[in-house]
Amino acid sequence: MGHFVDSGAGGIRSTDALEVKRGVHPAGQQCPEWTADDQRTTLLLLIQGRFRLDLNLSSTPLEHQCDYVGIDHSWQAEEDSVILTVRRPSVPWV
Image (tube, rainbow, N blue to C red):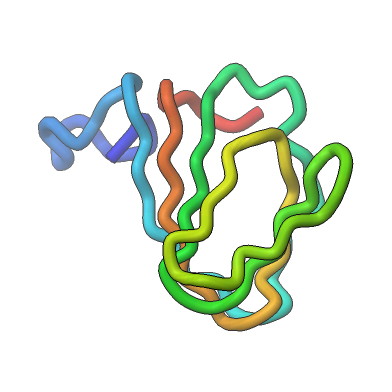
């Protein structure tokens, strides 16, 4: 659900109001770029695995199911991980 879903095929799932996506990240995969000055609110919820978020002041591991964080961050999957990301509003990442 979000801006990236084709409005013709996605129907009500195509929206700029909210973005929800499930990410499957193999161990070692990372996103070293920061989401600084993002105009969205982001929530990352761990479903499975171990996932590290590097925050402005520290690093925070997501180790238990339903651990979450919502703040400017970069990340790395420390184990094969499944993450649920919710963003509001849904806008293309710059």
